[in-house]
Image (cartoon, rainbow, N blue to C red):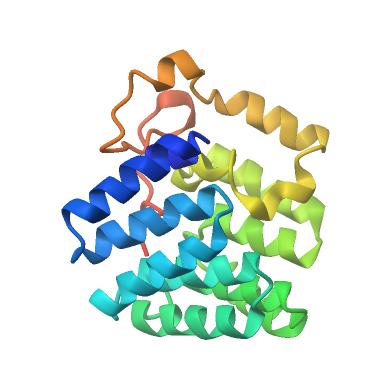
Length: 219
């Protein structure tokens, strides 16, 4: 998965498919392969892998979330919302799943439902700023999206590792604020990336500091 978030898609696909061949009955590995295909915008393949993950483990929240987000990227909103509603149900309304559902509603033009979820998320003491930024981006509220991305950076939000590849922020990539944030993220250069293992990823907060707050990447 680390190769996928780094944008090294061909290597990521190869490693993911090899893992699937070695352990085809692992829901986690099927999901990981689907996640990598999502990173590389191979949405049809991502859907297939997430669906297979759910055949193996129907209660996998992460597979439901990424299946839903992939359907959002494909503009298949009815299927997206169905998957994301199931993720919210299974996770008992965790912030990541709730924010993903809000994004699905926003992308589908169901603004009121998206804003209702947003209002509840923003009441929480610890909210997933990165995923909330995705909701604002889907709503077309660019300034609010940037405020939340900056909050995620300040909080050392683990999900920021997706910033390089996340399709939700494609419309913001030419904005100077996005370019500035990308510069501050200090993503590894290619010669550094190739020294890192493709088998694991340690979520290192921006700036290298430890983060005492609850980890916001948990589903």
